[in-house]
Image (cartoon, rainbow, N blue to C red; front, side, top):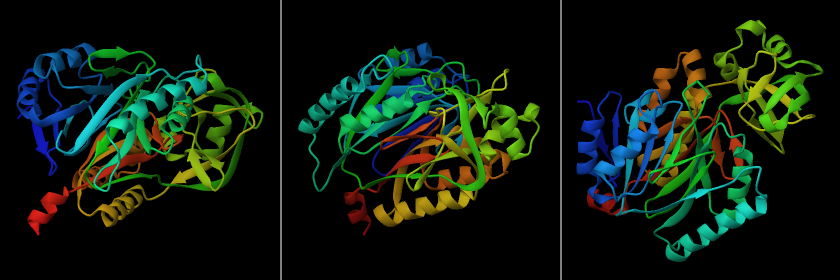
Length: 391
């Protein structure tokens, strides 16, 4: 079959295809969406463009609200993949979703952007109060090439008050040319889509990463913070210093090198990845996350990705019981590192067994932080009525 459909216990559905099957996807979507309240669409730019997605939704489900973005890989019900079109349908029986575009960038004051977020949150909470049987949380999708993700995370965290947030940055495979965000038929430029969700399923928001710091320190001595470019570490050419520290030739630096030897920043007692995106012709390094002169980065070594991922999913099950499905935002560098360490099959199998669906990102949003080399997710448990019927 060109279009595969998986339905979960709560009624959520995932449709996905890696083939040129837009017509078949349109037919399958029309049949599957009768009980949907919102659709999340993750797609590879190598497969389709924004116009195709917009036309597909307009023809098949013209009244269904949706948010879509391009990816750096997809997490399908069958595991990790590339070149897919995925549509996740959230059922009206258990979900209420509101979505809005947010303009959060360096041209606006942070408090102004946060005020827009707060207004949207207050309207949603007035209509959907939390109770013993339902919880509210926020998700976001933002442009992974905007250089604004830290501002986005800060403004959202400020405006959302204590509402938990997770999300991911849209990708473009490993091309890093342009990403795409769509909200209800409108293509957003340098934008952010904020989704507020009310859900009556058991749920748990989580993150996991797998790295440990070494003793190697790199001080940023010359950079361009606005473009996230480091020109010098320790007062010398950034690419050469980094290559020397990790023991490779500067000419051989690649995404595999960056994934296998991430740089981390200590904030309080926590370590956060500041991952390298690419090496530039002048020997500088472009980063996925914010950098600045004077910060001290530590070289880290990834450890036990499969084990750490299995552990966090086991912890989720202890909290909410059986997992119905997980919406996951998984850094593309984790996928590259898994491939480099030959554990891609293990990770893909873990995702399939635990019903993780989502996409590979250029960065992850988790509460107030913009992160790299992290899996951030929200896990949903089996509906209470379904549990009681089974017992």
